[in-house]
Image (cartoon, rainbow, N blue to C red; front, top):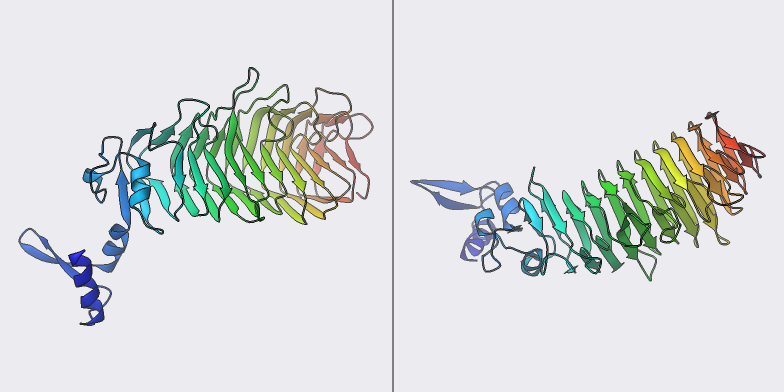
Length: 372
């Protein structure tokens, strides 16, 4: 604290520039404090499985042991850096985060938040803007839970083997987020969802980029309407991502209650079996008296099979009568459904510069009621 006062006085009273705002002793030499060094270290806290919550938490060798202690010590805007290792038990799971903080793995370190039972949630975000980077959440239910938030950003995060239970189900909710006032943005970038889903209700939007999603299995259609399930979410962007190797009702399911824009671009959907009461094995968009725009640009749909119950529609894509569908520069290969092996659109749709090959559907491979 004394050092901080000296720095402030040096800047305000003596007019020392931002490049040199204090001095520290380094052996026999007196070395200037530089503003970038101060800015980087003054707002950082460290956590290690080998730390101690009685430590100060300001240096890696004086790290806390639990994320809870670090969150308690941090102010909004601070950064919490996690050292290599696995974090579980009290203080690391079922963790409440109510401050605007960034929690990140130290560069190159493998950091895992490990839940031990279906009753354990990873982290709970409330009324905050939180960024999580470089961390794996394993076997939680869910990994991230929120009922009110500003922004949750997940970068280079792995949500692995989330634990819902059920004899035929493999996987569970990775993120379970909702909002009562229609706000809150979930951002997911450069991440992996292994046997994990997104369950989003009433929030402001989703941005998913460069993310791989695979492995979720629900062959009896008992747990999940979609891998990315969006109820009343008006802004949806999915780009440069991969969805593959799953058995699920549908991959992306948007049920709109407000005017909604869905943009899916440069994304691969591959080898997904849609079972149960499903339409659109890869993408299903519906609206309850809401205007919905679905834009599919530069995507590849291969081996989407919407099977398992009579008269399933749209092996890859289904849009209800409230949805205006545009498909451009996309490929549909080897998709299958009862009607509309590749696409089944009950409202207006436009298809431009796209390729269709080996799709199977009784009646039509592409069915667009409102256009072509």
